[in-house]
Image: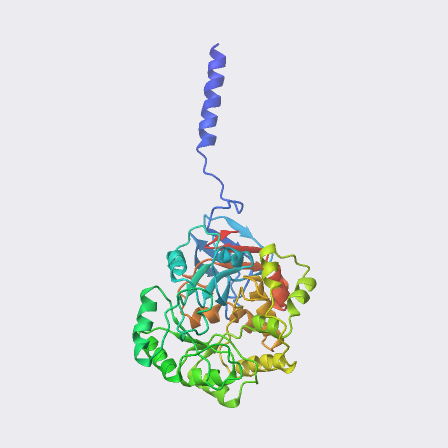
Length: 419
């Protein structure tokens, strides 16, 4: 009996030691947003880095280093794949589960160009936090500034409209009070080839941009033709949130945008669907991909049977190339979920079209990461650097030379948590 009691005591002692041992930190802990990853080839959103390891602590990037840091953190060992910032779609319209759809394609931040301010307000607090999330961060314009019966009023949303230049400061103030991160304006030149809705006047355009700038906010302008783009840049717009295809960008417009520092979001994925409607099927076949039913339904929508001259598509590519060569900032945006587009997927399509317009790979990747982060002054998104959120993509080593790697991400992290 004495021997049995001694044996039981020994077992209890051993169990006590085992149960009090520290839990090993491994890379398989799904709810851990503190870790070290490497060795990787780091594209930080602007350039390739020499460092090979990234330290993430509670969802924030805290260090980049040449050697693996000696830290008591889980280690996610890689074999030299490419680590880059999560993608930013600089032109979307979101509701429902759009933020979740975006994240599934590696889009960790979106910039909403017109939507219900309450939806934007609902998601604002998450932008500065690193809690586990299944949706992308959102920055947005809230209600846009448009004319009575103008573009944006046709969707059943009670959009306040502008009818006089003197009312512009109040219109801007109301949008900022409702949570807008910047001001978006719809403008169509009086003699524009593409007249699709009533428009505010040039005087109202100028007054709205001035009011936004006095409030120290960006003013971006929706245009759809060359003449409207020229007016918008002359009026002081910080960015054009569409390109145009009625003609290539003139020397005058290119120089105006360059000297003013005006950026452009070409939304070529949207326009390709309108003008040709071929690239979605082409890329889905080439990349051997099957999209969710919701994405396929959105891609299968069309703008109708309007036939455009073939050179309109070439105009679109040529404008993007001319602006890029002149040093005009190019931002990637899809305008999802308009016909022929889908959240997440269409940003990847946009990147392919930027490449076809002549942008080198690094500039294409920059257009969907640091470029929109800088243009819209996003505080913690779009870069791999100390103090940034750990919104990350791990892609195959072929990403150093080929864009298709982005269609097949090896891993996605949002706030440091692996999806």
